[in-house]
Amino acid sequence: MTSEFKLAPSILSADFSDLGQALSQCESGGAPWVHVDVMDNQFVPNLTIGPPVVKSLRPKTTKFLDVHMMVIDPEKLVEPFAKAGADLITFHIEATDNSMEIIDLIKSTGCQVGISIKPSTSLAEIEPYYEFLDLVLVMSVEPGFGGQGYIESSTSRIKAIKTKLKEECLQDRVLIEVDGGIKLHNARKVIDAGADVLVAGSAIFNTPDPVETIKEFYKV
Image (cartoon, rainbow, N blue to C red; front, side, top):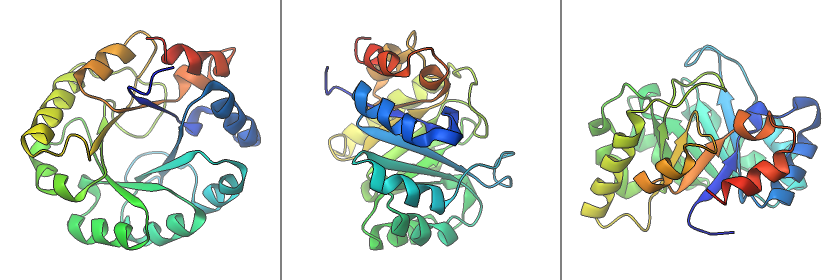
């Protein structure tokens, strides 16, 4: 197994009646992160989970809990998710006019901080914040639902972010995470473009053997 990239299985596609099993599968497969998709039915047209679920997951795993907030007013949920046990909290640049305040708020909780960007949003929107981040999350589908196909133009966006991070000597400090349509057949392309963390949901949990599928990702 290589440490070239990190796999972050998204529990959005797992069996919500047995998230403990999903954590066990991540453990057995060797995935170091667990991705938690938070949707409020306002910023995106879907409703998922909140801080109580993260609180229930925290004592059951030592995995890095990667919380992706697809919500309006993200500042209202930063402290609840931090207290629940999140390791990293990512918010959407499109969800606020006060990105720097939210970055500072997340950092004040002791969590790592990420910014996410939709496929249609210009990369120029997030570039001023790179030096303050731990992670940039590139959405390679429109956020809101699992199981969508990878938007091919995302590859060039990943490359552009990697180039910019290198120009600012941040490539070793700021991770690029990619979320949406990641499958075994396209994972290598995304990694080669510059991704450090791959989020995969249905491609893992909708397979007959999620543990084996996780292992297969590390063979691409």
